[in-house]
Structures are given as C-alpha cells and as structure tokens.
Length: 354
Picture 1: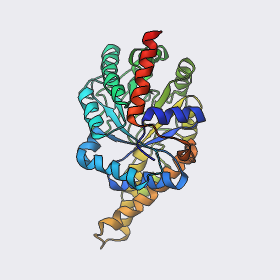
Picture 2: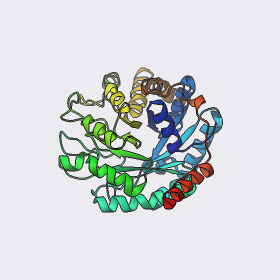
Picture 3: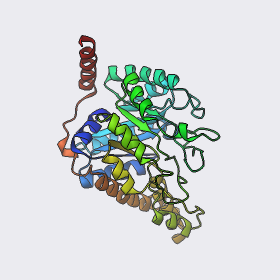
Picture 4: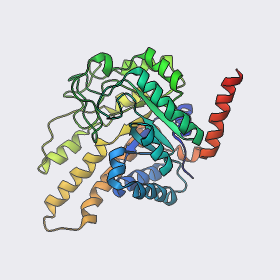
C-alpha cells in the first residue's frame, strides 16, 4: 500500500472499534520485527521514533529504513510517527524527513524536563498543527504530564521526562482542560496522563484505580467522543521477560506494567493509539543475554540479534491481535499527504463559512 497519516489510521480504528499499538523502533531488527508481525496478521502499521532514536540511527539512515519497510511490504498501510517532539523545529525536521505524523509534546518546555503552562502548550502545539496540516501531516498533542501516581516522579525516556516530583493535579489530565486544548489546537490525537510513565519501573504492584486512573480516560472520552486518545507508557512489562533477563545475569527488580486488559478497557473508551517501547527492549535484551550465555564462543552478531527479533515478532503479533488491528490492513484505502492536506483545508474553510 503506502505511507498514510495517523489521522487516517485512527479514524479507521475509531470507525471499526480497534486500537493501534504504536511501536518505537531503535534499529533495523526492531523495525523488521514490527513489519513481519504486521504482515503475519494483516495489520496496518504504526511505527515511531523518538528524538534520541533518530539521533542514534542518524536521520538519513532512518529515513531510508522507513522507506525500505514500505517498499518491502507494499500491501501494508504504514504510518511513520515522531514520538515526543519537543518544539516546532524538531517537528519540522521530522516532516522534512518524510514522517507522516508528529507529536508535539508541549506538556514540557523545549528542554524536555521542565513542566510548562497550559498557555505555552496550547500555543506551541497549535503552531505545529498549522504547519503540519498544510502538508497533510497529522499531529498528536499531550495535556497533563506523564508520571507515577505512586511516587510523583517521571521515568525519563531517552532524556525526555520532568525533574523532581509533581502532584496529582499535574500528573492527571483535567477533562475540562482536555476539551479546551482540543478546541484551541485542533490536534488529531490527544495523549492523556493517567498515571503511566515511561520505562520498566511503572508500578510497584499490579495497578488499580489508585495508581492507574482509567476513569480519567473514560471521562475525557465522554466529553470528547470524537477525539482519538493516546496512552503513553503502556508497555505491559511481561513477567516472562523480566524472568528471562534476570535468569541470565540481569538485575531488574520486580515491577509491573499496564495490564493488557486495562489497555483493552481504554480502547473501549476512545484510546486508539497505544505506545509500546520497553516491552520490545526487554524482548531484545533478554534474548541477547540468553544467547550469549549459552554460546560463549560466538561472535556472530546476526546470531546474537536473531532470537530477539523472533521474540519481538511474537510480542507484536500478540498486541496486534489483542488490540483488534489484526485483519484491518486490507480494509484501508490509503490517502496521500496531498489528499489529507486538501481535507484539512476544506475543514478550515468550512469553519470560516460557518
């Protein structure tokens, strides 16, 4: 098929009642795993790269990796998304690289560690929306700051995350503010804060309503039934992967992620994009630890990486199936960025006429 935008993909997901796992990729093998898993179950694809992943791979290499994935699987619709853009220039760079969607995370200042004000967030996000929609590119915004309700702290993901501690008023999205933000910015998708955080150490116990506020998602969806919601920090941190890493000289304390049934609950209440990064990292590193321990004389890089790629394929297949995107790829008729730009312009003109 072709490159598609986040808006088209999430509109389809909303119409058909499923959620899209958004997989962060960091190298060739993680991208291969996501694409192969999608191919096995006929799912559309939503891959994303953070600023640090882009820097690690190199923007030119990353651009061509994504192009190769689309060429290799021409029958799958693929959305390429920038995760946690910190300012307009970062988002513009991603658009120039060919990303079909960007996130402008104005919940933090451009330093990606200082909580911002509502006014700053809305103004900066609206700027990105204007530039992006003119090109047909989608925009995800965020209202509320991601962090743990247990500790008040935020786990930094690749250097992105606030310093110090915050209160519940900042760590939980205010539904009224969410309504205002969508109106002020015209974002295509809205990331909300409900107690999840980046990294492996999300919860010290299986989360309940005290530390994972799914009721906030339900209330925001009630007020914004046509807005696509996003869950960040939604890796499940599978116990078998924790055990795998620790069995081969790892040292990960017992930790808990977001249970799949809670993600599925969110999907029933407007969550259309579910960010997953740590689970892939754990699948890759646990597999490499096991291989190296069992093959002490090996220096074959391909052999070291292949078990992790295979384990990541299985993980991604499970997410595609549990979230309901399996079988949906062939039901999507891709729209080009130019066609999406025309739709955005028509929408704006319609507002002006009204």
